[in-house]
Length: 398
Ligand SMILES: [Zn+2]
Image (tube, rainbow, N blue to C red; front, side, top):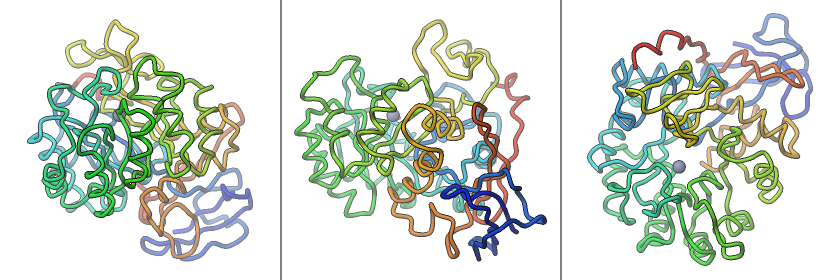
């Protein structure tokens, strides 16, 4: 397969030759027989470090009190196709706080699907474990259920990692909890990214976590108190620390455009990873779900019915990249790098995040008008097209 278009890094017209799952060659100039065209941008495949679910499919069985209508393994394949329809080639299925048994079952289900589905194996770059080692305090805890949050526990982490067959690559935890520093050291020694999130830590606890090896801040600005001290703040400390890369949900609902602008200035683009944090109701047609408990609004954002409270994220990286480009000082190439190069660096993936011979053939082709949305032309995962979906028939069944 060949694809052609404008390189996202410098705007030059290139043709990318793909053999098997790798990029065989990148040459200057166009190719009229190749997929793409002169007005199409070619980027490394978009890479989302935090996806809970999408389009009625869920990596967290039962967390919405809803049944998905297909077997999970088939659902994961559909979920992957839906994500690819928005340009996401690579992603980290995210398992959130639940009973230990349910979390282990969810991890086993993902591991089994990845083991049996080659396309899923090409797209999943690791599991993100967000919980149960999170702050029990209202605000920092976010939507994680209080009855299931727990203190850091290395044997419990190991039990979950065993259920995941070693696929957990990111663990988000609250570093102020007793035992957190030992868990961070354990994670880092095991090659797992220790991420700070859903925390009420003071600044010193953030510094201690970084000294122990934490390298990531999970959705900074969310999973926070409504009001925080103006000096001793976990947000300032994480923004100021150059050893932490921060993930951001730039969907227009989770943080304000001005917050995104300031955070990008503080961290610099090379330390910002855009994530969706999408949930299973994301992408479904507007309406009420789960016997009326949740409502998907006309603009796609999801609320607890009758309230302004967000019940999860819905915009995917195609939207978040465009928002980050328009709301911050970043140019389009930098915004795209925050969803390609940076996540590859976070997970230390040597053959991902760039378009070059020998790299994995994970590519996203898109068009964009100056004021319009991003139009995904194709999403290639491990050398194969992965995009295309129709969600229009799902509203009746959930
Ligand atoms: Zn979270």
